[in-house]
Length: 578
Image (cartoon, rainbow, N blue to C red; front, side):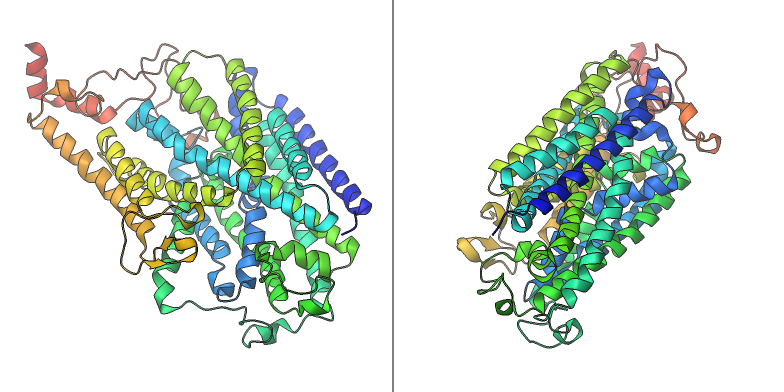
């Protein structure tokens, strides 16, 4: 394949434009808010992200390189087809559910990151434990899409994969480093426009290629391969449901999503943003679906691609850039390449910022340096943005199973964080003991279920388990959802059991070593760390918030139920008097 100078120039121009927008947004950040809340301006954009920019950035966060490449691949692969392209519907429903049930309680309480409510109720240790799967999800997701971008660019303009990955990562890291959420949000507007324009321009040219058969015919009839509409066999229905629930429910507890929710100017705006993004995800998936259908309707031996076809060459995951390269004119394929690059950067920058935000606030500030200045937190965020960006880039270049690691980490987000989020927001009475037990049970059930992408054999063989490729057993049973439900109910049962044992006197108060049930004063006090700044919240949203009264507040995160119980319990009062 010849080296395309025009393609390289187009990519350079696109990257420079994105960088310019990011730097402009960084300048805007410096002129927003007071000097004392700069870290919050970087994390949640000063809580003044409007509907237009907010809708674009939330949509662009989900519509990444994996989203459009994966949707096209699912539609193209024989035996799967549109029936297995679950991401568009799954993520859209995820955003709708997030808007209906999760956005308002999170935004109205003025949290800064997704982990704040966990640390408020369960303490800093549990927040640190939950940071692990959250960080893994964000980092492996960024690495996976960087890897996809490198392969895409190498297909179209024949440039070294490593160079393309490094340059893309540097650009995304640079504007995230200097501007935080403002840079990410405003570049997302440009990137989403490029995705929409680039893919929709490519579709008519690819569809009109002489080697492409009418996609309406190939949707229901076998021409070159099985119909691209696809079907779900009766044996695979539980696998399909398991994956669909993972996308729908597991798509909620991500810092990248809640960062947009918490940056909204009001709780109502946060809900509307979720609904707008759900619609945007569906619209942006349409060209990817059409490109996958075009790939399934093409006689590849009549194109420059030649024989064998992409399925035989095991290049099905690259069907989108292959269609752009071989079925579109050269200048059109460059537009499509810009779309893929935009999709990757719009998701990668969000993941990097999300990981650094959680670390700087929930690990560094609230766990170790409660008295850290705002300037110190800002510098910690900048350093971690660089470190996490470099780590994601290194994984994209060196790891042979980045996608396998991301699949496993996204499973952990679904199995561990989602049930914990349900409990912390909606189930009254859960405590740290239940949270830890639920965490461990969910983790063990997921790991023992195996992971084919990592060549990890299962230790528990559920009904329907069969031997797949590379002698790895594959589960048909929806064990991921089983693990999630087990984690959820374990949290509730153990929490109420611990509460009963301590309150009934079966266990003495001194055994409450986590200070989760009967301790009057938590040893995990976090001086000078506030969850809420009342000037960032509309007045009608202040009702559920306990604003900070002084700089010497003994504890930001406290178990209020434990306090009330101690005050009203004559048994404990007698114990203390003695």
